[in-house]
Length: 357
Image (cartoon, rainbow, N blue to C red; front, side):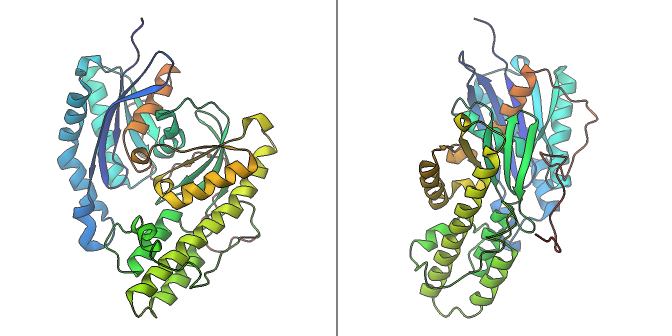
């Protein structure tokens, strides 16, 4: 039995300090030996959002301990590690630099290959952590910083079919939570409050719902929530607004995903109808249920990463490192941190006002 590669993954793109060791079994499916994530929620709570300088300082204070804990929990020794994979972007540059520098130094001192990983590629491939997922597939990546439909052809080969032209979906959830006076990070609490509310109470806009292909827009929805939130008189109305927001998001994603299915099928075989949903917002159970039902209607296989791998974590970074290690796709030690690093680098940059369809 040949030795399977052992990869150390490091993640510090925003406000989670994370490290993980990943290998694979005889069937080639990744095996997570450890996955340590240290959140900074308490650090940023009083500010109502992530403060980059405080986040970077927290990474510096914790990263050595987090990596050591991941190695100890894996039951492996440092000399057994075959390569080090660190997130190089996109993200907050002061945060990215911490994990990236640590990974490079670790690789240099142990004389092991270094692999720079795109954080979005980690999310894109995260379902591989618990299933054998073959290319190609359609991906919906929904997180605090990104909302995109992508055709995934192989590692490193992505074609963007649609993207948000303004705010990311996760950001819309977080801002709505803040308007409803939910403590940071409150986006995930919207779903909880929505269970107590009437989703028909408030009529909210669905920007570019009938145009723009499978591009997305959430800024107008967020503005509508802002206006209504100023009229809220009691908790029940707060629950109703949360429910109306949740329902509106589901309706937008339902319609836009059908458009994305049609776009994907133009260049892929009907036998390859696989739909992957990844990123932090993929943990929203109602969105999951709605998209699974849609996949049943359209004869798509729906694939979601486990809940613990939806948010930022280092297991997905190590897993991309594992894939690249097998292909000998190593990085130079002068690889820069990239605060903006799209998966489809040939796609036009659409974010911002003035986009016409």
